[in-house]
Length: 598
Image (cartoon, rainbow, N blue to C red):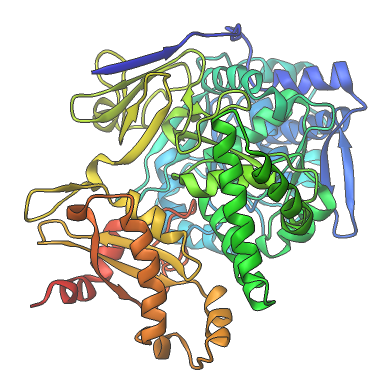
């Protein structure tokens, strides 16, 4: 059994709560821009003092409406400035925020509102309100007293409603929470079953950010530090960055529509961003396909190889002269344009949610964007481990953060202890006891390794390990991550549990497929192309590349290209773009059976 601990390096507050950062910012740096809002006609700065005043006004409205200390208030909205404003206003009122993904169905919304006993909902737009009303009609939501809409000026409505609440009353509410009190109930998006509410305290966030902001000082604490959030704030990954920016006074913007992201990045010019691996894969694949379409495919491929080689050479502490010259050339021809697509000022990116893979990690570092891969879960207030600017090992998820201990169980499962580990599942003692053992170790459900320097590598999910008919244990994530890196592949599911060999189902990327078809003189829709020999051969190249990561017994021997897509809207992906394996396997049972027929 291997164990590795990183000593605590900073003093973590033992009193107060998350609202203290907003008060301190207004008092110590009131004129400092801490947000930039996209008004549709440009970006407008919001100072620390202005944010403080807006939060207090909305919080007073919540108090006037009868929201009591400890009450749950749900937030159903895209990523936008008002999301952050309401989050802190709920905490100022002494209440608990319950985020809901804005893509959630009426049934999902109803479950979360009912299970959490939410007293109020802040919804963004008419379509969100309609789903809340449907949930109300079909479920028992007796606790729900108020529904406010951001589009119907909820900020102003609550500001007027709370005009008679005194500063003294609000301050009493604001200071009522301690590090031990609940700050938020985040419902796991869940790849199987109904989501469970993870109870995260103010202390969980204070511990996590106390150490993370200090360790990631090159991101948060530079004079011009800024980030543009575009991931859902209902996810703990974006949420922890939000709280970290408020704590460190790094300027933060919000981008609600992924279609406008390139424009928003160009205008906002963040110094760091956060994204899930699928975003980094898409950026790489799109750039590769565009270069090929413009007749520069070989140049891009060579530039990518040089970037990867240059990054790998950095780990050896010596970059050969010829490689340095090639890297400098491609920096002018290729890499600079890629960095410009991220706004031109971005030096770091934080990746989480799934493994990024060695190749992409080295590619981005090679073009001048260091991707710091980390690891964590909703139950651990985001990061347990992270690669740092001064301590990075590409292909791993970094060392445990200060004050955190990792242990590899006898069965390979990763176990953790630390102040960021949650208090348990809301109203579910059995699930809590299964996740947190009697000694306080959190059982992640992930299988991994810890090297001699403490760097952690994730190798798969404990419950997702496939056992072939020959008794070979296979972690599908390794193959799936590699195969998704192919430009034509959107998603894939590796199968083979109880079967004589490993197979895969593959869906095609709808952005890159038309470009490939035009280059190869093909026509027709997806259904016409899935059996095309040239397309099958191209995907086979991706399979061959993925198989290099595993032994022959673990390799993909057959695959099927599907005509459909797996999407969040279709119910096959979680909002953080993880594959719901059980759902996909159930819906694709016929295709899986056909792989092994005969």
